[in-house]
Length: 374
Image 1: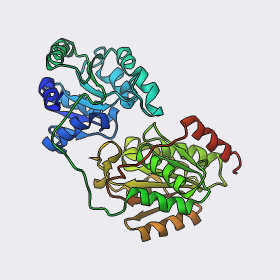
Image 2: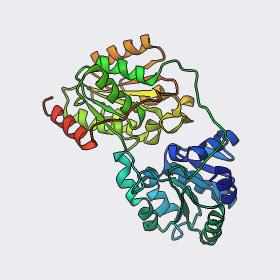
Image 3: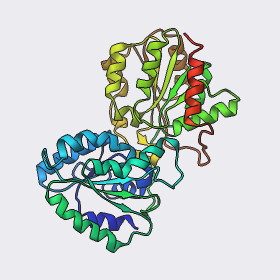
Image 4: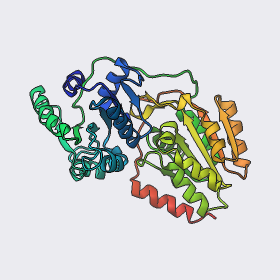
């Protein structure tokens, strides 16, 4: 189904959400049509943030907004959906458009399997009526579902369209780029060279895939790395938990700007605890690059300044490999909580692979290695 038909059927004037590769036709349409326009389209820090933005829009206009997201974001909307939007509270109608990763019977990555199984059930539990759109869904079926949903929305309840893989199409190609020169995979290669046998916690998406392939190419063990394949935004908190328990071990977190924005409060907790053995590296390309390249607000904010305000003891930035190598060496030698912000280009190899070990194998190998450290 062409995404234009979905847009027409929804009839909404305001969209907000977190980009998803399964919803790329919708995301590309919104970026091509509106860009980032506060009157019509905003990319949120996380899905709960998007639900709250949608609530504000409805309060100001009386109109029904759309919140789009990957199904992994359902966890982030449970609180606002249950305690803000719900018809037993403020009765704020919202249309959710949800990319269905890990749909039962469709091969996907391990972090999507359970979420895929419970996607529709979670909506049912939150009293959010849903309709699944697949490749074979007709325009008439979509229109009939929306007509039924109008009565639900009029009662101050929420509804959801769950989008199967490949269900939406958009003919216009949208490219995302920035003015930075450094490629993320090469950045991670430099990080791996300096960290040596120090443990690394890497963030969701292509960064972890690239770290895995770098270890393979170097003939190195994967035991040094915890690949946070899901749970976007929580890598630095995982690293903090490890660093506190292993105070004599240098712990590195390789993070992304979209992940940092998703749960930025973790930076305040990091700064307040200020472990001397933790290095937090934020690779900032100002984009949700793993799911297509749609922008984040990270290119418009002062990540280094935020880290300083949160209590990070040493804050470094790099936009060249020379500056990166110098910052990595400083962080390696330092005995204080350090942040390195690295400015990065958008893009990755088309043939980038995925980890060949399971998540459970990764966890056990990493834990076995940590057990040998102080």
